[in-house]
Every structure is written in C-alpha cells, then in structure tokens.
Length: 308
Image 1 (cartoon, one colour):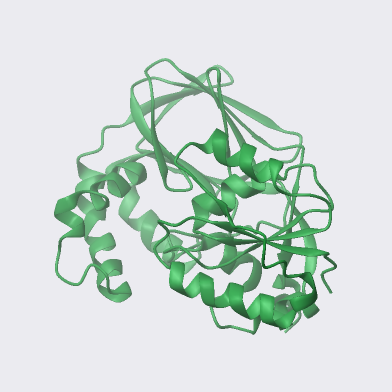
Image 2 (image 1 turned 90 degrees about the vertical axis):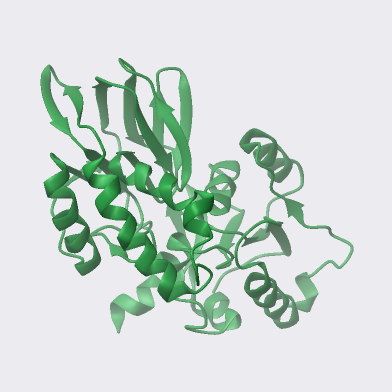
C-alpha cells in the first residue's frame, strides 16, 4: 500500500484528456478525503520547463502524493522536479494522448479503480534518461529519439495533419500516424554517429525507458528497471520493418545500464524529441546519454500484472 499524507494535483490545462484525468483525481480525493485539502490549489504546468520544476518544488513537501493530470511531458517534468525525494511520490493520471508512463506503471485507463492502485500498489524508483547535448542538460522519462521518428512527429503536429477528418478519434488518429511513417522515413536523410572512434550512419536512433511509446509500440524495458533500451535504423528502408517489430514487441537492441555513459558526435543537423517535446541537434554536437543517478518515486502496480 502507498503511504502518503497529502494529495497534490499537478495539472496541465492544455492536456488532451483533462476531463478523464479530473475524474480520476475526484475518485482519489473521494477515496481518501482525510488527505484532500480543498484549499490547496493545483500546481499548473507551463511551457517553461524550468518554471514548472520550480513551482513543483516550491509547493510540495515530504509525504505528498502528486497526482499528475497531464500527459507524458507532464509526467517527465514532475519526475525531474522530485528527483532524489524519496518521500514524495507521483501517480501519472492518464491525462494525455499516449500516456506511456501511466500505462507502463499501472496499465490502461479504467484497468482498476484508483483506490485499488493505492491499496495494491508499491512505490518504485524510476531513473530517467539523462541527456546532455553540448552544454544543454535534459531528462527523458519515456524516450529520446534522433532522426526520422521526430520528423514524423513534427509532421503529425502540423495543421494539415491535425485538420484531417476524424483526427480526434483514437482509431483514425492511429491510422494517420501510420500514414505519416513513409514520408517521414523516405524524406529523412541519414546522419553520422561517431562513438568510441568508430563512425556509423543511421536514419533514426531511439533510447527508450518505458515499455510503451507513441501509444502502440512495445519495448523490452520498463520504467521500474534501471536501464534504457537502445535501438536504431540504418536506412529509410529499415525504418518501416522497425516500426512493425515495435508494434509487435519483437525489437532487438542493446541496453544502457545505470552507471554507464554513451558519448556520440552527431555529423549533421537533425531533429530530436524528448517525450514528444521537439528540438534540434546542430551539426558537430556531442550527445551524452546516461541513466540519472537520482531516481524519482512513482506508484506502480506492474508487479501485479507480472504475477498474474
């Protein structure tokens, strides 16, 4: 059972499933009214990651259960804010579109009541992926990718794609996402990666922490495990079979373990994204990947699924 003294809401007002997250939050407060302070206002996230981290750290204390009414980017910034705080626990609340971290830790929405998650859950230590691009330091809770997949995500965020008929429907949006793969793959240029003095070329590189990514893909890793799954595609022709294997959960790769650091020099300007947040790596930049030494605590019922 999860022990806590106060329920605190971390809320992204622009999340895609705010209504669902608010319903779960109401269920949590109804189940544990003694820990619900009605005078306590939600901690609102902002586009400024640093400002959000400062807000969370300022308005939380030991014994807090942070119910995150947001999607994966909101989970990530909350995890970063409470890193190293063993007595502050977060519970991702399925407020986004993919909700990869929430599904990894506690299954699909409505899989079990919130009270059961608290009563049967355990606090697990999560080590996010620590990323340094030259002097810029960032963290990824779910995944970090360079190349074609970020290009496809950028395409999906254009007005043209979002205005397609039925984009708000989960099934149709999934079909549109698959339709974006071929143009993203075949219009993506390969980039060089120099690591340990050896140079190779790739069209996409992925470092994944969560079992789920982009809603449909399944990876041989979990947030409760202290390593990241590393995989890449050498050419555009490898990317589509890679995507099929990802959906089937049959991808092969290697692991970045806790205490290990991988240093890569990227040979051309290329897109990247961290938990769906986009960015650009400039030509000649050095990228370092490692598991964060300071874990964040989260509620998980994954052990129940493994025991079933």
